[in-house]
Length: 309
Image 1 (tube, rainbow, N blue to C red):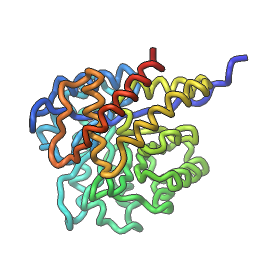
Image 2: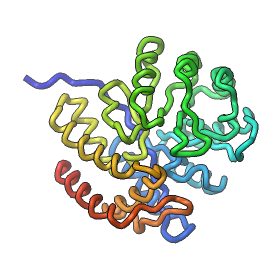
Image 3: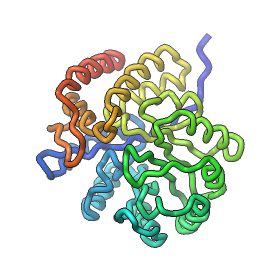
Image 4: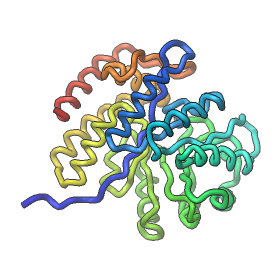
C-alpha cells in the first residue's frame, strides 16, 4: 500500500547576492541563483538579509527587483526603510517601500527597521493594520537581533492580534527557537488556519512537519535539495525526507553558528563549490568563516548530490 500523501509545503528561499570582485555585484551569478530557485519550485525572496538588502543602495535594490521580475512573476522582496538607531517610525516610508515591491510584481515583506523597532508593542497591531490599508497582500517579519540589530520578536499576544489584519497573509519567524514558533502555530491553527507561519529557523528546518512553511537562508545553498526533501514529505516518503533533512540540518547547524551573519560566507563557498557562482567573496562587514569549513562543505555537497542522483 502506498503511503498517504501529506500537505504540500510552501517553500520560499532567500537568494544570495553574489559578488564577482570586492564591491562589485555579480549580476550574472545572481540571475543563475534566481533561475535555480525557480526551477526547483521554490519562491525566490530577494533584498533580504541573505541578499544584503539593508546595505544596498536604492538603485541596486531596484535592479534586484527588475532582474527578479524578468525571471519570475512570483517572488517575495524585502520592503526596506533606510534609517538609523534612534529613528522614529515612518508609516509613509514603510508604505512606499512596500509599494516599490508591489509595483515590481512581488509580495512585500516588511523588513525590520529601527523606526519599526521603536513602536510600542501594544501599538504594533494597529501599525500593521494601517499598512494593510495600503495594499492587498503583504508579509510580516520577526527577526532576531543575531541577524540584524533592528530585529524584533513579537510577543505572542501581538502575533495573535496581527492575525486579524486580513491583508497580512503570513509572517516569517526567525528567532532560531522552536518554542515561540510552536506557540504561533497553535494560535494560528485555532484562529486563522490559512495564515502562513514561515519558519526562518535554519537550526530546526523540520518545523515544516509541525505545520510551518518556510522562508530560509539555508535553502539558498541548494534549492533543489530542499525541493526534493519537500516532495518526499508530501509523498509520505519518510526515509527520503529524513535522509535529506538530516544532511540539510547538518549544513544549517554548521553555517548558522555564531556569528550568525557568517552563514552568507558559507553560502558563497558552497555555491562556488557547486559551480553556481564564480567567487566566494562577500562584502564587508560580513563575518568570514575559516578555511576549515571548506572540507565540511565538500563532504556535505557530495552526500547531498548522492541523494539527488
